[in-house]
Amino acid sequence: MQTKSTKKRNKEDEINPIRLNTLTTRIVYWLFEALIASTMIASIVLLATGKQSRETQTTHIILCAVALVLYNIPSFIQWRFRVYVPSVLHIFTLLFITAHFILGEVGEMYSQSAVFDKILHATSGVAIATIGFSLVNMFNTSSNTHLKLSPFFVAFSSFCFALAIAVLWEIFEFASDSLVGTNMQRYIPPDELRQATDTAPAQGYGLIDTMNDIIVSTIAAFVVCVLGYVSLRTKRNLMNRFLLRKIPDYDTAIAEAEEAGDTKLVRALKKARAAALEEVHGGRGKHPHDEDEPPSDKDAPPNNEGEPVSGEDGEQGTASGQPAEEEEKQGEEISQPDETISE
Image 1 (cartoon, rainbow, N blue to C red):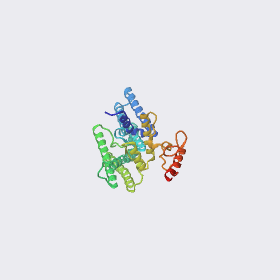
Image 2: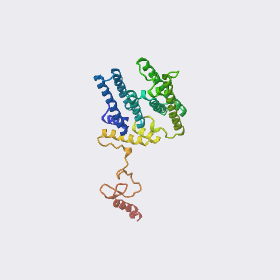
Image 3: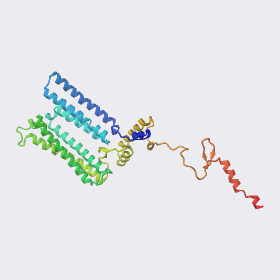
């Protein structure tokens, strides 16, 4: 059975990485989530009034629901696995989800511009390679790992991870086009591409779109993995601010962030730790390691050289605790010769 002090100590050690999200991340999160929710409500209204195609509005509602679920995956990962998601990567993910589902699918940007599709595939390649590099590096630096990978194999594993995700996504596009009748592989080309070419290519628009997507994602992943390799090889902080981090406890996380030179994360961790301590102790939220005040006179070490120290009542005394006058008298008595013995 846990005592009250044990429960309080466990509460102090609880990590909530969601506290580490910056104000910018929270603002972007709520703005884009409100945009997706309003788009879903608009699609429901149009579906109920019958002003537009029932099939189109149903698809839009499903897409918005999927976007809302994906929107909360970074927060779930933070809460469930105690992983810190950097603000740049978090906002980047939110932007990608909004651009794909709202602008690309609901706003039909994919059918109007072929460049928009390639930009999203390039950005997704960067994000997936960064996540893959973070995961491999996190496992590689863990204290429970007995086998350590070299920087090359960390980068190579991350590159293979990014390629695997890109291939799985293209398989998903093919399955969606075959089973549901969507146009994710762009076998019906965008308007600008159809106007630019008079005849369809021999391979078909769908195959060309698939291969271009994989090539773009591969190039983006390769660039990220090369930067990661150079960062590990030269021990420079090129990608530290963009990597996921496991946070077992505040003290360990602060030490690792200071070693990595991530000052933003250090400040965020100290602020989150102070907030957690304030919840437990009721306003006394400053951690002992963060105290900058000098020690008081009561905490000063004892003076062994007999120098005068001030007591609580303001009288001068020595390190032995006796007043200075009494100690001087005792010294005189000891120094005087014993006249009775000498006579």
